[in-house]
Length: 385
Image 1 (tube, helix red, strand yellow):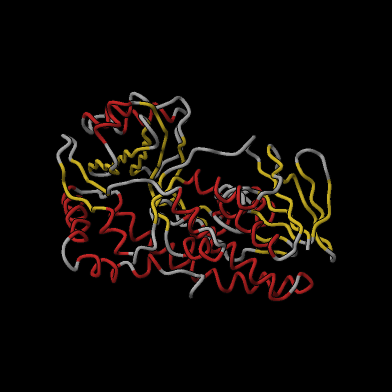
Image 2: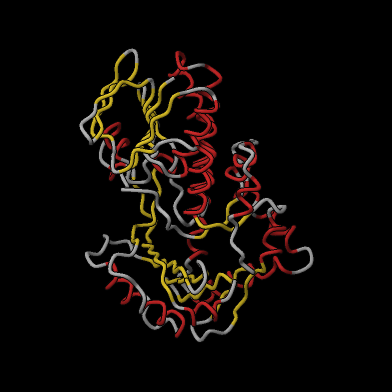
């Protein structure tokens, strides 16, 4: 089977690894000019952890894990206001969790895959035929494949060509988010190894280590409106007055930070003919759910497994089975993401206080077991379901 995967992120790399392992020929195209080394920190567990284990890459995964001491909530004045030590957090997930940078996970998968990626290229158009799909890429080439997979993220080009404009399927949750990295040795010393969170009603800023003398800033605020023309200006306006730590981080905000709407993708179908979607292109749960990369790996694994079970000549049935297995799982995770949003970025101060206190229970005797029971849906894996 010959497959073109559009998108060399977590989903695309994982799918390529499994398809090649099954003896398939894979062509990977990626619109970015080269490998992306940036990305936010994330707690990686559930489906993604299980897939990495089946790939035989757990040692590599733990080797890239960040050395975080835990999550600490701070008041704008910098005083501790609750949190959760990382050892207690690990117990919540039976020690099957690591905190990693997204860029490091991508790099680990690229090394494991060890195949050519055609950078600076995307899918221009495609046409379905009885014996496969003819794909024209943006470099002018036209090739025939048995399968086209859109693994090109929440703003997927392949999805737009399959099912129509993005606004039909994008469901904003009423928040904007931004992130950037910066150098500040003094501030990095003050933050140390913790993931520091400062919150006021409708606004939250996270600061965490990203290398010697380096920090990453992750910012989320309530905003149901359109994206701003000048993201840096909006960031500095919205997050001003959140205390000395945040003000200092804001001075480092670059002219072009990552900035986007917090949203989910909801589709009634993921495939048509010899083309399908995987990862955020069809199953984005939003940053509020915090499992995008783990879900991407889970979806890629399920797709590869279904393709292998029926062979490429039974592709329509395989794509239907993939969707039947994944869609209910994704719907559940998306519901969790929507329900979690108000506690991730609370609208009122009393909600912030409750959130901080509840998270602190995990560090108490028996707290990890209690939190584990309440987070069963969050930790559920499609690989073992």
